[in-house]
Every structure is written in structure tokens, then in C-alpha cells.
Image (tube, rainbow, N blue to C red):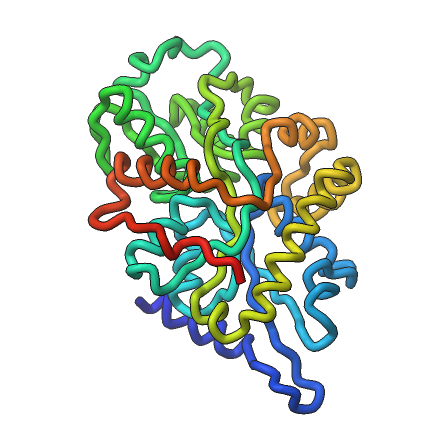
Length: 322
């Protein structure tokens, strides 16, 4: 609760609304993760640093974007609940959990961003050859309840394993993406279920091999808080439209998009990502601003199977075109 209160205070200090009073500006608190699957957010953040803000250009001179980065979705959703974030790129697992926990009163999906781009990897010399071989093993995921964590637990359940938050037949260990490499190299875990660019990093720097590529899944959405959507629907519509245009630009300008992304990832994580590594990771991701209802149904099922979504799973209000 103290963390939420502090976030709320910081957010309140950062936010002030303009209603045509002098030179005051509307500050929009915008979140993303330092992942290739959040390319729209990473690239837009890079352009903001350069004074060429993509969203700023579409929103007009009386709007400023304040960027926040998160390791994984549950932290971003806490920001939405605390009122310190207005919009954010986030995976479907935490977004669905936040939506259902709040009875549909806190979160809305306003646009798609990316599908696929996640994988379960093991050591190249690992004896793990079949799903049954994971019994007694340890798997790292980015954060408890994040999209890959949910996918991992749902998949393990589908293989017949009993998995709890603290153990079971297979132990799932939430570990921040930047910390997974060292843990994997030291054999502190037997496998990692994560998302790009970390999948490629594990392949290249830790001799990982892909055991399972998670292709048929939503990876990233763009969501808004319900309050921001209700108060400033005009701005939310411009944000959704700008995200769609940015997605098309990324699809049509891969080389330039990857260059901007590499620069920004280094600024955010202090980790170097080579151009060929990013190009390798890029091939796994499907950048798309559409929102697939079929994949939403799959995400809901995964969340229920993993034990994170309980009770009603009515998603009729989840998607809202501003």
C-alpha cells in the first residue's frame, strides 16, 4: 500500500490538466517495457528523447508525454490502479487480470501492438527433450503473473504437471529479464520462458536452444485507464490512431526502426544489443495494431488454467475504440 501511495503522489505531482488556461500543458503518463515486443513504446520513447516525439506530434503542442519503463505487466497495472499511469503497453495476462479484478472498471484495451515473440528455452546440451522431462526442473519467467509467466504455468498444467506459486512438479521462478542470463548460465534454472530481445540474448550468449516458440499468442496491447479514457477521450483516440500509424511505419521501415530501438534499449537497460541480434529477434514478432478476439479467448483460458483469473471472465467491455 505504501508503494501505491508513493506512486500516486509522484503521479499526481507529474500530472496537471490544461483546459485552455495560458501555456499550461496536459502531461500524459505513458508506460512501456524495454522489450522488442514493445517496439512502438521503445521507439516513441527514443523519438521523444530526440525532440521528435511521435505521439507528441499527433497530440499537438499543448501535450507532453512523460515516459515510464517497467520490467513486466503487474507493475504497470499497479501504476494504472494507483492513478500514476494513463496509458501503457502491456501484455494480455496482467491487463486481463487488472480488468477482471476491477470488474471492468479500471482498464480498457484501445489498440493492439504485437503478437508472438516469446519462447521457452533450455540449454543446448540439456537432457530436456520432451515436456515430461521438465518434471523436477526450474523455469524462470519475467514476473509472477506476467504474460509469459501465465503462459508457462498454463502450458505446464496442460502437460499434466501440478504447479503452485511456490513449487509443485515444476518450480517456476519469477526473475527479471536482465537477471535471467546469469541465472541460466550458472544453471540456477534449467529453462527460461521469456520474450524478445531476451530470447535471442539467451540463444547467443548462453547457448540456449528454443524448446517451444509461443507463436499463437497476444504479446502486447496498448491499454488506457478508464478514468483517462472518460476524461480525455479525444486524446485517447489520437493516441490509438498514432499507435496504428507507428505500427505501419515500423513494418515499412524495419532498418530505421531497429536502429532507434537498439539505441533506446541501451539507454534504458545499459545492455548492448547487436544489430544482427535484434534482426534475429525481429523475425519472431508480428507487429499488429488489430485486437484478435480469438486470441483474447485463449489468453483468458491460459489465465484461468494458471490460476490467475478466477470468477467471472466477461470481457465484453475490455476493448473500447475511443
